[in-house]
Image 1: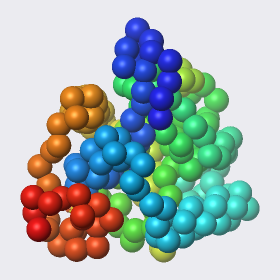
Image 2: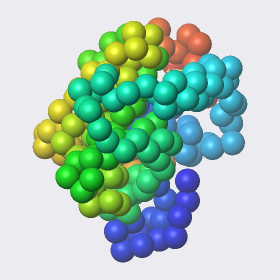
Image 3: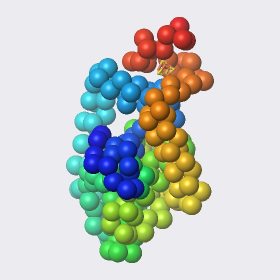
Image 4: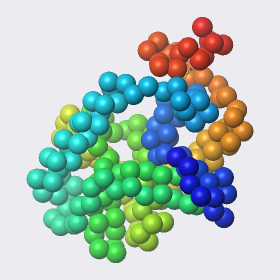
Length: 203
Ligand code: SF4
């Protein structure tokens, strides 16, 4: 995604919050997406995921906030925000706003478990975007695990937030300098990878 260059983001382009997840899976996927942006096809898996998220949002609108331990709050769906400071943009499934007192990002997941660190990092990134754009404090977020219809609360600590900032800086440097990163150590991920043909050094 490109944007006008600013003092905070002199390079004038944004990473996406979803790139954090891809980077954790294999850094090369993010590298290829930005440095060779025309080669990535839209897969059936991506389209199916969009459909499931749309359905989850429509189900959510009919539910109460009890799953989040709340009796009231304003639900905002499909919230797109950017951070000039981090050079990061993201689209949140939902944000629950409790006036100016607190905002709580909610991320729908197709997983049955919420402990993956990159899930927490995504929520921390959303916290940064919300605080910068709306000036409302964010202390926690929720992963809504669609298969189990269960919300899991994640505390968005200072440590999680500072780890996010250095991660974003690493990713931006990799793309700006067009430095191909090391491949994932989990070689099983390469078997069905759509970028496999570009990793000539591995096969
Ligand atoms: S083939 Fe393997 S190393 Fe190359 S981008 Fe895919 S997952 Fe990463």
